[in-house]
Image (cartoon, rainbow, N blue to C red; front, side, top):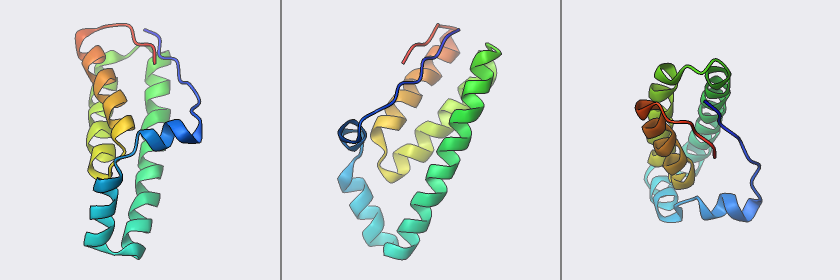
Amino acid sequence: MFVRVVSMEAKEIEAGLDRNTMLNLRNAVGERVFDELIEDVIFEVTERISRLEQLNREADLAAMSPIAHDLVAIAGQIGMSGVSDIAAGLETCCRNGATVSA
C-alpha cells in the first residue's frame, strides 16, 4: 500500500473548510472555547495522521481504517470538510484493501 502526502497551499486548505459549520460552532460555544477546540482538533488530527503514516509504512490497512474513520468525524464536526472527505476516501480504500495515493 502507498499513501503519498502532499503539501497544500493556504487557498487549497481554505477551500476545504466549511465556513458555515465553523461559524455556527463558534457562535454556539463562544470564541474562547472555539479557539481551544480548534487547537485540540489540530493536535488530534496531527497525531492521527502521524499514526496513519506509520501504519502505512507497515501496510496495516486493518489498523488504518478506524483511525481514518475517527478523522472523518473529528474533522467533519468542526467544518474541516476537505480533511473529512480525504479521510473518508482513505477509510473506504482501507476497508477494500486498495492501494491509496492522495
